[in-house]
Image 1 (tube, helix red, strand yellow):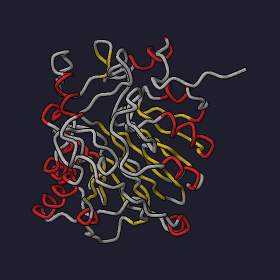
Image 2 (cartoon, helix red, strand yellow; image 1 turned 90 degrees about the vertical axis):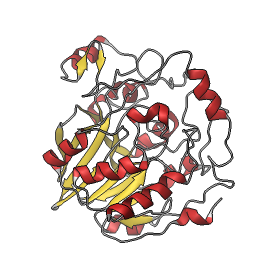
Image 3 (cartoon, one colour; image 1 turned 180 degrees about the vertical axis):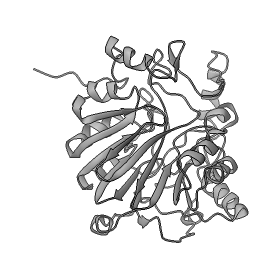
Image 4 (cartoon, helix red, strand yellow; image 1 turned 180 degrees about the horizontal axis):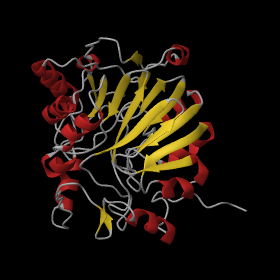
Length: 349
């Protein structure tokens, strides 16, 4: 008997889910809320304009040729703590305390559920990379948007994964896609749970979530802090600028290394995405000592900037602030302690 393919829209909200969500201090008026008022227009009048802008003027929004992906040396990656590999956009593989962690494993081709003609990944065949990955001790999801939580990637990778740490509300999607409930730990903002020798905390961001027309803000969104061996790593997560960055720094910082959202911003979405100057300022606010931009190099999801601009502007702003920044190639093994200012994108069109 042919099995039905899991729905891209994820799991439906059941009474047991709703009861758990209602216990969160961040659940009000039937949905999760940002800590400060964050208005986004989803008016029928504005959506066609955004779609038109997204589908036009595409020349510089994507590279002329596919971006080549380095072949990671996983032997090198595995031998040293705080090694990392960036696979474009927000996909980060990291080695901490002898464990392998993977953040937001979106290796898919298109970051949308029903847009086969939509923006394609700059590096094709990334799903094949999953076959080459080592066994994954822990996968973490910051939120449930399609450019972070991808059905195809999840189905392909789940056999390699031992455990999942996810934003509150995301578990229902994983369960609907075949992940066992006992493999999943959900986090509310500021929740801290140990994983082996690593302390992991879920931090607030100013964003939103949802995979369909009827589940907006029915799951949470945020970033991750990792503490081990006297070092602290912060993955900022998606979200606009606000005072919460100082609060993250005050409660959990300072940080040795920060993976900062920088890309897919535009004026319509300013409340929920960081522009490059804001990304660097957020790192300063939180007390980050070295930074790297993520949320770029994978897709063109913004009509407002070219594909190189997030990295170019991030580098300029970091230099102005005197803050060390690194820019590894996609697939390159690097360590948070290394110094590198290789602007590899400058040689590409």
